[in-house]
Length: 81
Image 1 (cartoon, rainbow, N blue to C red):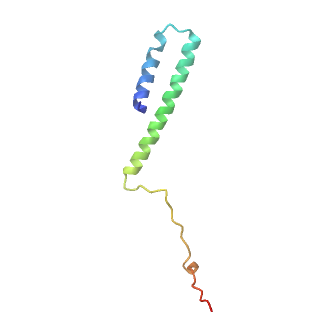
Image 2 (image 1 turned 45 degrees about the horizontal axis):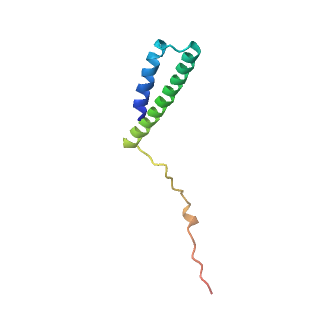
Image 3 (image 1 turned 135 degrees about the vertical axis):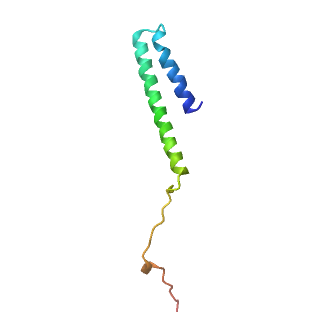
């Protein structure tokens, strides 16, 4: 199940939770649980969207970095006698 589908299903359960016959303690616990799950999935969807937009933009930078070295630090050839 995709993140978007999970958010829709959790939203549906949250909307109809007050009309169930569960005791109030169970309703409150489920409402908090569903809310936390919706928040977590929403955060993941947002991070995925930011990552995709960054990847599609022309300013995308990779995480690979090259180390610059000083020109005088070039390897010196040693002659064996």
